[in-house]
Amino acid sequence: MQNSLSAVFEKDLIRLKSEIEAYSDEEKLWIKAEGINNSAGNLCLHILGNLNNYIGAILGNTGYERNRPAEFSEKTRKTIY
Image (cartoon, rainbow, N blue to C red):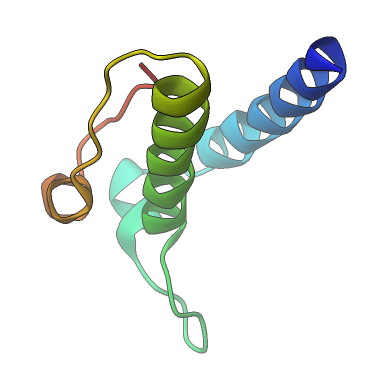
């Protein structure tokens, strides 16, 4: 089961990376389109925070401690721990 979940996450993260790289300018990641509640960059912050917390910290015991206010105030390049 672990291999199956890993394959799904890897496939989806590769697709997400491709979608993000399609933006011609990183600043455009933070622009909300009309009728859309979150920018693409904000959605990525949600995904990374969730992955770091649930998969990294809880399942992987990485020691990561989530700080949601800081995640969304810094808006810089993020990495998965």
